[in-house]
Length: 320
Image (cartoon, rainbow, N blue to C red):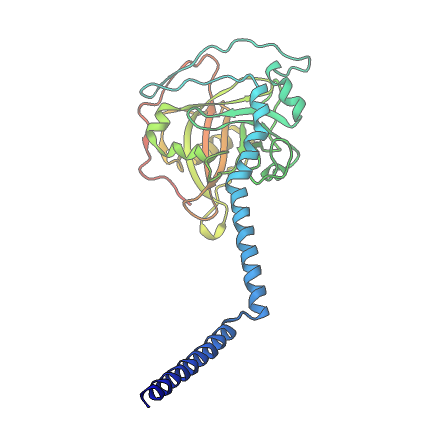
């Protein structure tokens, strides 16, 4: 009797276990069935993954790939160009060096530009700013749009290439009163991004003179202003700095005065109606659609000493 009692108890325990296991299995299968992804969800997930990977690839290209291509495209030009350097200043005092005569081609172009003009006949000069990465060929074409999104090799590239306003004149004997060069403000620090260094008065005092050589002549330029304006009438009154010709000396003198009163730096550099000026234009990110313009006048013939030690931040510049 005791043996049968033990078997009955065992059978009852086994039946209970089987029942519980069966119930557990049913619940598990229901959960799995419930959690099973429907076709629409699978499609959405797949598309999301593809978009994520694609976006990541696009960002990698924009921030790493494209800047590398930009630098590669410029490499052969930098290797083939025999440029000049510009002295930095000591304690705000700049001393120039005599420019030696250089060999020229039959058409009057400086021989140092010969190889890069063969690569791109749109090249009209070279821009360089001491102690910055700004050291680029400058191109010019029949419009102010092509080189906004094409590199020096005329390939599609959002970095573009610094270009001279299409209305400016560059030849051996003539230079526009206002030479205007446009360049992008790349967040990776290339193109004209480092013009923002001129917001620092100490940087200005160390680097008051920049260089823009044309294919015909060597020129140095002393910076006299750093201004902001807007390209959007909704955020202020735009300043029309995109001018290359002036009807009278008075008109030109007023243009220079309008630049000075907008400058974030107050400099002792004198500029008259007899001078040529250079404006470097790029985006400024303090406000939407703002522009930063660095203004410089051509170093005069025989001018070898420039003192900007008295320069300071402007107390009340006219802002957009």
